[in-house]
Length: 134
Image: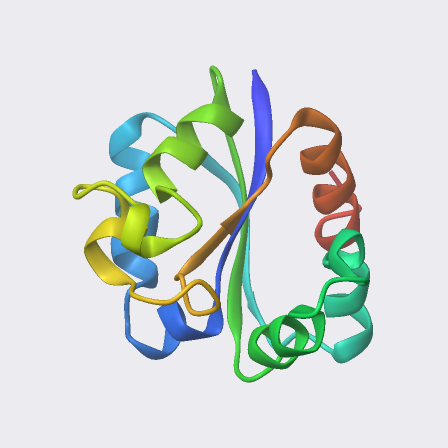
């Protein structure tokens, strides 16, 4: 079974969409194997998004993800990474298909409801950052 990391970002939590996001993953056939609500520190946010540190949007990304609590999850299932990403929809919500989390609930790239690992190596690193016990 493959595992992936997903996060309901502050905008999703503030808007009360956490349950809907979890419901969609579970309806897809993914199993939640770890989950918690947490207020991210700037340090952990910078570690999480380190691959974007040279990009112009890095500061805004860190500011957003630390602005209020997030829901952190590890999902498990066949092709979990691809399944979660398809469920999330395109990173730019304007390009996301209807029926996806972003296509149905988001309008901006920064406030796009969810983050999901994009590859097995990324999933392993992100799970290690947030759920080292796994």
